[in-house]
Length: 70
Image (cartoon, helix red, strand yellow):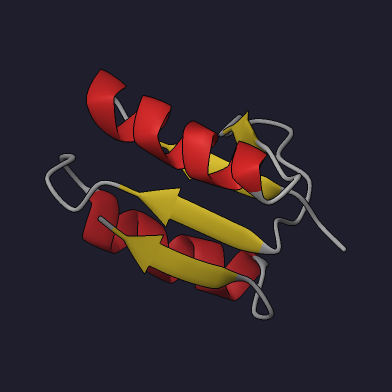
């Protein structure tokens, strides 16, 4: 199982998602563009500039990854 990955700048969102994951015994890794291992789930903020283009690239690279937009 790949990691849960979070690509967000909103501190409140990050804290909330980390807290929820922790309650389930899980954790989010921070997104690392250059050497990111294939994630199971990638959560990104819809408001981030260029995120829609990035989603296409992520799905080409990791077709089995679930992408969640917040």
